[in-house]
Length: 256
Image 1 (cartoon, helix red, strand yellow):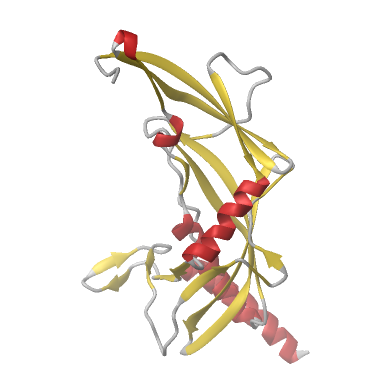
Image 2 (cartoon, helix red, strand yellow; image 1 turned 45 degrees about the vertical axis):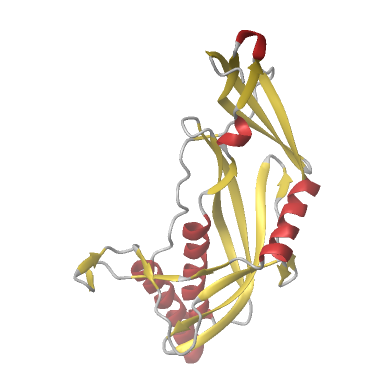
């Protein structure tokens, strides 16, 4: 019983220390405004673009097979007021690069599948979610901790009208680690969650080149340009529909 009480106390103290000294890095905010569901009836000059589940799956499969597994460094945070060379003060919760120790890579690698989970994007019940399988290592307390597991994330869409870009903002809802003792689990969860929140965001989903339209009218020696004014998202089972509302303008002298 004494050992059990000490273990529970250690977990609670470890969790508190991890959150106080390390902080869980919030998801880096995407620019623009949150994309809302479409109205009952689309306004004039609206175009609907559909993204099927099979298309998303093909993009992810090509990423893993053609580009390799995405890897990024884990970070650690400095306690509030700690002096870091060259004399810069780091505030509590501010990210600083983790040092390599004992051959540890201090990194996390996203995997196509692992821990019984397949990495992918899912459209269901009006939400966009993405389970992410991963493995990695981190130097903690002088020991190289090898870990693996998966994270459940939620993706929100944002539209930046000046940049004509649709972004995705990934927020980690929970992290599931395998074979890690309770105290180390707390610290590693903080690092993994912060790494995904800070290093992945914001995702660029649709760029200006893909949104903007230019229709040449040679007889008038000009262009009819279309610029997206509003973007709405309709999340359906097995896919996503973007409702793009445009404003048009005529530009003379660019008909060629």
